[in-house]
Length: 129
Length: 252
Image (cartoon, rainbow over all chains, first blue to last red):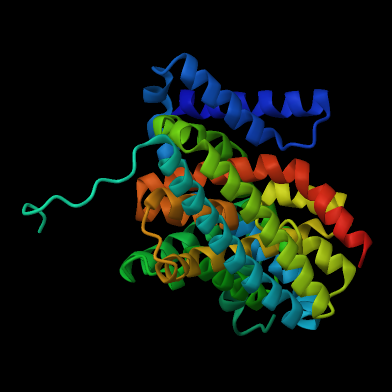
């Protein structure tokens, strides 16, 4: 667990250092993720060493958002004053985001399938339930 | 202290001392966060992972109530809770592991995913800005809303850049995650989308880490795609959102 945690921190650190030194507007941990992915591609054996720790961490990803969420206390005044606008904007844009991402992906997958593989077979007589 | 009750007065005094010490040390904030989350998670499991019993929502409500009752300022609580908050960074890095395991499928689906990412992220941002503007929200609030579908640390950075309030953005990010995780099943079922990779990717695009957490619990394949979407969304948004949102905000 400790080597795995250290690995994650080292990659986060490399990500942060890279982002700061190149002053690109991307978050350090995301670059760290990309670097770790690259490392896994180059040395797949690394996966076995870090897998249990990454699994535990990701299974409880929700917990990590709790402290930021409790920050709602600081903004009750504003949230109360603009409750309608904020509430409707949150609900509508979240639903639009979910639906538009899913529909776009399904549409592009269907188009890709049409382009690269022969048209789907007509159903065979008999065997089908 | 009344002379008749030296022992009781002493005990109360000692209890006050203990409380003064504990309320100032990070131990209490950290412990209470873990305990409350554990309790909320048990409720979530008891409910059969019902999307409306989201453990983040339950924990936040319970913790706010506790802080309000004990009159504890958020800053004091955060002294302890920051250790949990810090783990968001390593957890983001850890997403590389499930991504690597899904490499073969990811390679095959890169174009549909890229399209879903760009369309999903931009449509969520533009509708958030548009609806909030139409309903008369202040410019600061709109700027804080714009990056709300992106994972917390990135969203806070974007908000700061376009004139929003980073701490308000953090709250809105969490709200979005809870809303997305709670509503995703109904949205996808209504659209007749069954493919776990699509459900996961859309959830990660629209509801970042909280959506990803939900996806991992329901289906590991969805989880990997959600994690990928969350990572790509953070990369794409960090570059594109300051430009798009900044442009729209100039017209408001």
